[in-house]
Each structure stands twice: as structure tokens, then as C-alpha cells.
Length: 476
Image (cartoon, rainbow, N blue to C red; front, side):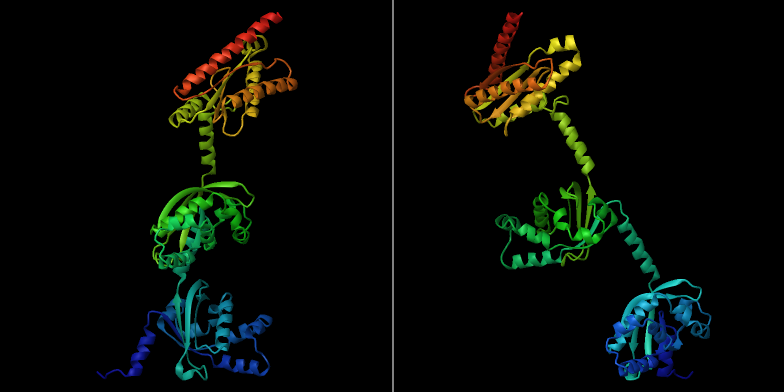
């Protein structure tokens, strides 16, 4: 058996290659380029944009001299003759876009090009392709021999489209981000001897903001635009300063420390803001994507909107600590506060007991709605009376207490007078029944429990109530 020649060997490599291969002749394109240059064309991109028909003209100048078996299989042709007679079915529509780019590469003297595009099988099915061409060295002056390879990447493109749709239509806010600038800053800090990032951030309050500005947002999905009330991606990215502000600085500081310590995943809760200024409570999942531990170039951030849950939690917390009728703190909160004050005792603490007069009479004669109205009016007075640091609680049906940390006897007396004056004012704005209260106060001193001084305030209130009842009998 005769030994195959080198030519036979390379012909077999071409013919049986597992990828689509084309031998083409671009000499016609070179000739028309020469004509355009002679006619004064210097900016081919502008020329093609002004004369798009020239793109189709150059496409028709491609001469295909030979294709291999994989090419026939890929494009569904029975023979090379059938394929070559149907090139207009293969090279059409979307191909013009990347052919434009190929022409610019040729015009600029490049001898090779690679890019993605779309061709068509003879049955009309679209093929996503990755195309490479190279003008062979011996033909660089004439462009008569060009080797083209076409890889079918349809499955890859479909997979990319599928995952893009999963990202785009996910029911949770997703962000693709680039943290590489933060990584470079970390490296710089380490090179300069910084070993404790938390201490470094504490010593430079502006550092956290600078780190935040280093984040580059690559992509966001539809849920993100909806969550932050942005009409499009551009308007969101242009207003990130409105989204990430205030409370975010504190939890981002902790995130930076986690990154510094090598964590590639963490979860936190925080507050962002919509573009309309509404707070958005979020549960954040931060993931440094595998393979990017050394450059931080790809980070996936998922934000779950937990605003409704937070509101429900806040409401339940409110119900657990407040009296529903009046909006004042309830007895449970009062007792918890008293325990905290006793455990962290710091005298003086003043207590004012306020008892609503005539509640039973109002209920019996005018109905419970009238009694409830009196209770709410008393609460209005107490809310208007208290200052920062003080609190008011309803601790019984008709009994209230004011707690005034760091308030001496003089301040307690002033508070009693304020309450009494506001009661008088309240009665000017409401019809009967008349709002009336009995008040007693006491101020703590070392050596006795706070409960002792609450009891003293209660005794003083009952003395006041006795005077009230004696006055009422005198009126009668």
C-alpha cells in the first residue's frame, strides 16, 4: 500500500475535522476595498452605515472553494454543490451585523477575526455560531485563501438564554456586581501593614463610603427595578446613592470585615430605600462566585424584600408593649422597664401616678363609649406632657404612670403642674364628661427599691383622690 503524501494527510485532516471548516476566497473583497480607497473612502464604518447595501454586495463577493463533511452535516446539505448553491439561505439577516465587524477588521489590516453570530441551516433553522477566520500567510497580499471555522454554539446560547431568563424573571432582587476595586484596595492596605480592617475603618469614618463607591453594578433583574421603583436600569444605577444610604453604612462595614477575613458568603438584614424615598427592609445574601476568590470580579447579591415581615414583627412587638386603646406603653413594658432601671440603678428617678376620676360614673350614666373616650383623653394629656427620656404607661383600667429617669423632685413637681394645666386645656376642647385626674409623685433616693417610691407616689395619688371626693361632696 503506497504511503499517503503530506497533501493527502492534510486533506484528510480538513475533510474529517470535527468542526465545520471552509476554504474561502476574499480577493473580490480586497479589490472592492481598493476601489473604495481610490474613491476617497477613509472611514469604512461611516461609509457602510451610509450605504448599507454595500454590506450585501461584499457578502456576495465571498467565494467558497471547499467545505468539509461536518459543514454539510451542520447546515443540512446533502452535497457541497447543494450547499454552495444555497449560500444566500445560510448567510442572511442577523449575519449582516457581524459581517459589518468583519469588514472593519479586514479594512484595518487584520488577518484574523473571531466572533459570535447567526447562520441558517437549509431547512431554515437558526444556528448560533462562533466563527473564526484567518487569511493564510501565503495569501495575505491577495486574500485568495482564507480558512474559516464555524462552531455550533446553539446549545450554549440556549443555556445562556435560559439562565438569563431565570435571572431576569427571578421572584427576588438579583444583582451581579464587580468588587475587584475593593480587592485591590484590600491588597494595598495589607501591603501597607494593615492587619485589622475593623480598627482601620473605625479610625477613618469616610473609608466605608469610599469602599461602597468602589462597587460596580454589572446587571440587575426586573424584580430589582420593581422593588426600588425604578423605571429602568439606567435610572436605578444613576441613583444608587439614594438606595444605599444611612443605615446601610453600618452593616456594609461588617460585610467588609467578612470579606477581609476570607468569607465568600454571608447573610444580613438591613434597610435600603426606593427611589421614592420609602424604606425597604431587605434580607441580603452575598456570594463571591466560585473561581473569583482572588479577584472579586463576580459577586452575586440577592435581596429579599422583608418589609411586610418587619412591619408585622413591629406590629406584634407594638402589641406586646403598648396598650391598644391609648397607644401608651402597657403594664408589661412598664414592669420590664422598672427591672432595667433597678438593675442599672441611677438615682434620682421620679414616678408620677395618675388616676382617672369619675370613670365608673361615666360608664354607668353615659355608657362605656364615654368612659373609653375619657381614658383616651387622659392618654392624650400624658403623651403631650412627657419629654425625651420619660415614658407614660397605662398600668390599670383607670391608672397611669409616668417614669422620669434622672429627674429630681423639682422636675417631678413641674411635670405634675404640666399635666394639670393640660387637663384644663383638654376640657376646653371637649364636651362632657369632664376630664379629671388625681396625681401623686415620688422621687427615688438610695437605700430603697424603686417599688417603694412607686408605692409612695400611689399613696400621694390616693390622698389627692380623697381631696377630690371631698370637694365633690362639698359641691353637692
